[in-house]
Length: 182
Image 1 (cartoon, rainbow, N blue to C red):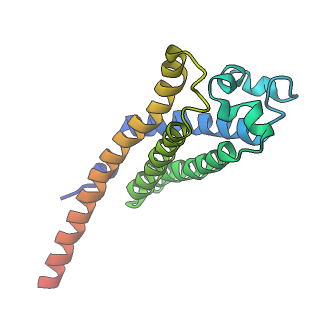
Image 2 (cartoon, rainbow, N blue to C red):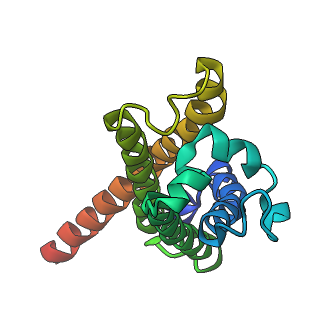
């Protein structure tokens, strides 16, 4: 039988969301503020680190922006949707202690994984058009490793929350069976 404490999120899941929520807002801010967020722009000081990244991953760069490529802002919009779901999950899990919190978190992390896999697939199918100019060490350190975290950790969260959801479904099923017998 599930108890109230079994629906409490593990600390590592809460930590992931608390750490990534501001990172996601920061990243989306860079994307939606272009060209002002680029080097030389009046808002560049907020996103100083992107001076390197926009040259590693050209999807974030000046040329893609000037060509009107929409993928960067499309993924930033998806990031915001995921982020609001992440915030909703934390609220539902910690403030409301709602049984739907695991479902919201589960949906959110699977959006994250799906979007990140799409990002990788887009790069593969365009012949590494945005990162292929880099040395392998730069690709691994600045692109694969950080982007890989957005696949691995949300997948682990999805697995953990999925187990919670399955447990809740079994409990609900058992309660339903008992009430039908009465």
